[in-house]
Image 1 (tube, rainbow over the protein chains, first blue to last red):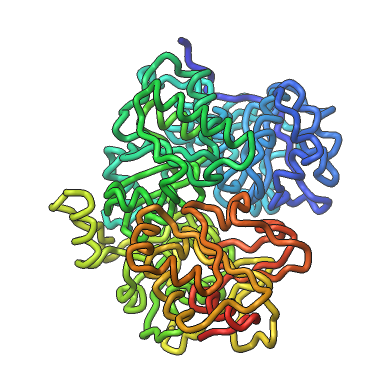
Image 2: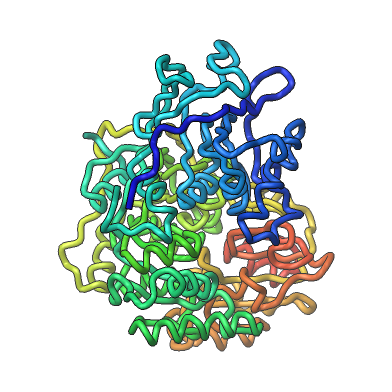
Length: 184
Length: 413
């Protein structure tokens, strides 16, 4: 079985407030409103992503497969709804880059095999240096944690490389599909 | 490398030296599921892993405790699904008569210092009371753990909570943990491992340590360790037949993200007022809070030692007319001890409703829910809106609960 790519190139959605600061504490109800919790088919989830996040309700209509989502601290705070992670997978979003995640959200995302990266001080870096413009194409190396310009020549940000567990589950297609004998 | 308790335990189970923040595959000494979550575990297993066997049938089993015996058809169906799977895989089932799974596991000598255990119980971290790493997980994670015998975990950072002083009855272990909740709040230990120390915890017996460790979840914590003393180590050796047990001590110079020190020498009886477990008030500051019902039991306060206190408070008295007193011992073994000592008789004579062991007082209201306007005193660990019914729940110690049942208002002996 071939391994999946570890260099992920796509448009970077900077989820910011009206002052240009990355939004913190985006909870699972803002990501995926509880009105839609009966949805279990992943194909139906994407349309509701960020549907309850003030200012970003248009996200699911404008996002395209390959996009990357960037947000602040404690992303995915709150309940354990799996849809809050899977709605991004449903839209073809390749990965999340945040300063930190809610613990349950983190576990759900990792178990889905969905790449999530942490960048120390991301909120401050984006506010002060703006190394990435909204919807700029970037390349993230999930093995090494580095984030580059589109052509891969200029390193823009240094993130936390994904742990072996995350890579195993990413390559393995999620927890219940992962076959430990063929660990990446 | 200088390590905290959780860093050592995870290192010992993952084949590498780990530090807080790392995400690693971790071997599991025991993998369990309850009637809550168990049927979904079975469904995931059968969909993704059948016809394979579980990794180790001696380390994999079910504990039914949430809705026992089943009082709804869905629960009855779920229990049956688990039983059939257990039969096919030749796994043990601690069935509807056994009691609270976490307590049963301790009694069976499965929970030992430095061990790792998972299940579908968010209070499995109660095992910190004997220095073991217990953790509740979702049904997908447990199905994977059943199949392979390991899981993954992010090594949490550790905080120290040092509790000094000597507590005096009527203050008890429950008041200790309520005081900590009052100090650090429901997010005070968010995502962290706690190492409890100080002469207050060192003087607690196993039931008191269970009480303290059982409310780490309500502080947002992952686990709260209390290192076993010689007495507890001896009991564990007897229960398990493993006579070379050693507790896991943290290294001097290990990294702690925070240290909280509290002097509990003037600790007095406390309650957690509705609707949050960290809404702490002194019992003596509550004036004439009329009580309609009292529940004594749960994984927090369901042991023999808790009921001994209750018996002592109730001796010579009766439950006030119009007040319900509901008793649920943690396990069959506790119930058996209480029968032998005629405590069940005493409680019955005093006017209590005594029910079968399990999670009845908290989960799915086996011992009854509260109605709108009903005020309940409970020895459990959660009092969120709607948790035990439409009424309001105050969390308290068995001593306060028993006294409140006699007087009909919240008070301490």
